[in-house]
Length: 463
Image (cartoon, rainbow, N blue to C red; front, side):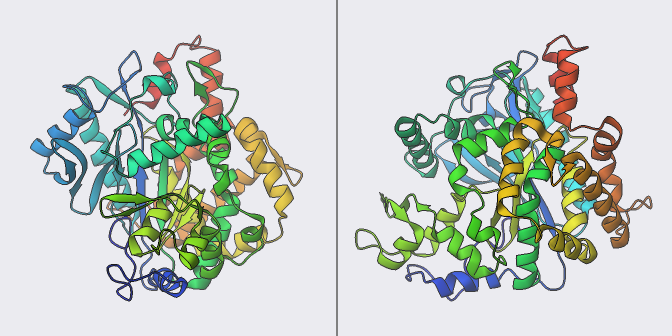
């Protein structure tokens, strides 16, 4: 799911010119009517403990040294490198990839059982903790680096490759629009992504619409990014705030909001977005137009091919990204104890037919204007945001109860007799007992008993 189905179907091979019909066939190729799997990608913040200083990629005690140790001792195989620099490693169906500053993230294998998803994560957690400790590096499950600023975080270069192209594009935005949020997004944020299957175009549409419209509420439930530069940022979800300011061109459009989220609707959406850059041999081309225009009219006598489409999809920084899977990208990174709650929540609400149908009917009654108003308030107010006369906290409780019921109906049991709803307990403790998100709880303690000291923050978030 996460790694194995990222190519167009065989109807488009090599340098054959891409068409809209080929792209549509690609989405249809994702239909999996028998077994729906779920996967998880986990980002986190690497720091020097306990000071919280940022870690560089290079050097004797940087991220590269950790990757080398994992290669030497744990059976990971190098799948991408440049000279002595490791850019990606793989073991089985699991991948270790790098963020723009060299941080190590897990792109997990797809599983039909949450018990397997969680076990893979716990193995990763233990390995990262043990290997990183050798070099004095600790990992924080938090959505935004609480201490470091942009200038103190080094960027990982790739000799003019995609990473450098993205960095140049963001620098261009910063210079043209005086907007530093795009750079903050690439350097300071960390999230958890969940990837799902769909069984048909109708199922694709239902799941996508439900998840797109519930995205702000999901962000509020799992918010865990309240700090910036050693202070409370004023936002309960600073990561979401940065996304809205820095990559807001990729937000849900009114046209897509009122659509049925068919393959054609999604293709329209991505074709309306800027076509940033594409590789041709040893050079790059810059269409400076929409992908739809590039598809129709080309640029410098070049027309899109398969790899251009995949490159373009990587630049769709939307809350939900559809390829031939559905990827939910809204969750802040979390402490290890809370991570399993994320895929459990998603699976419980959309892999249960009763829940999916009920939620689809619910969101179809919302208007675009009230959705946009809610989304704008969520970063600052979180679960206290009022939507349709109710606090988002009340919606959160309903969704968590639905997710629990859905997982119990699914009845996937581990060796100890636990169904998958057991993984919802950590987040339900926050929402039902504390009555707040992890972010709100962090700020309350940081301002109170912790005396604005970040050591307890690190201890709580630490892997």
